[in-house]
Length: 464
Image 1 (cartoon, helix red, strand yellow):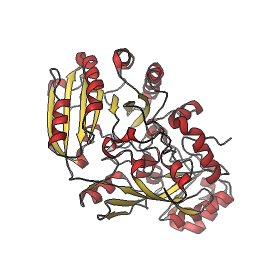
Image 2 (cartoon, helix red, strand yellow):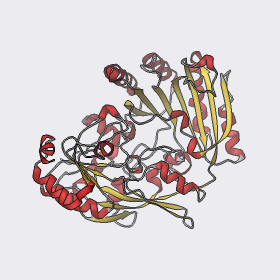
Image 3 (cartoon, one colour):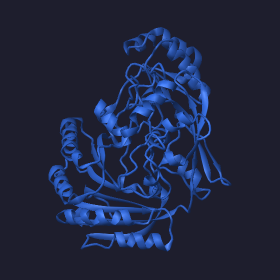
Image 4 (cartoon, one colour):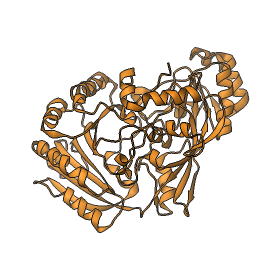
């Protein structure tokens, strides 16, 4: 066992000390649960640690850090493993696997939910929905931790803000192994840095969120247009998305029509432009807004229909094990020049699973001052996401090159900012773009709470 760990670059003494503390919850290559514990949603980013420690609570994280820091070992923190960067797993080091910390507690009087640092949104949603609450996340298997610490652009964003805007309090283990609480009134600087600063300033072992009081039945508008109508549709989206009801979250995308029964068979495999808007409150005003969204031109398909909250992301679901490269940036407007360039640069797309999507932001997301949280990008009404998926390793170069080339060709139309959660390339320039005008302040918070710069497996903020 120790020989295998040594071959992965970690001294035997480190492994021995962790095994002494964690016994069967300390996993090394060859153990039955090792492969599952290191699996990443993006198989193109897979890495192989020497040791995985399965943490059940904050005390376990503290105990693991005591060993890790004593040996100066590299480490990472894994919740859902959904980030395309693969930062949740570190080669040849120690992974703190928080997935056993998945408890979900609902306070119906306060309309809040408290969740463990290893929870995934799918499980949180099911518990909260039973009590008539919608958390500030997404109806997917993504981890709560990474999603939230990067800002958290969720379905209720235009109504109540990002996930970080709905945080009440967090339990944090600092890089030195101290357990603290952070909120607006307690360790406020740490709380500020955690709300959009990624994993740079602490390890969150519990989150408490405000939720939207709403039924689980939502409304959806779904439209599909010929690719020849793409320019006119995106121009329409540019106009209508900022005016839509704040309980909706609109998206416009270039896609390849998937072979699903709800869509005409003769369209399967064809390029198209799609509009998709979700409404989390089913009142007349939301329905009217969605009907207006779907009332344009001559679509192949135009529908407004009810859907369970848990099914809202069904059209976009990609199972684990695919390969991914994502990039993004924010826009003040679309405009004819950008739309023309987007169509010229991104079509054809490299695989049928790939999409170019534009999110309509605004509403409560933009009502917050850019300095109120570490997430800085509060003035942009749109975000573009290049979402590249493929399955064959032989397609790596073509798919990654397409994403990088498209991003480089289009990013000058943007604000200069990028969404950290949809970012795969993470050189220093790109990380500064992700944290924007708040980069230097995040660095100050990190220097205070992580003075030894131990938290590096993330879009890393430099402190000197």
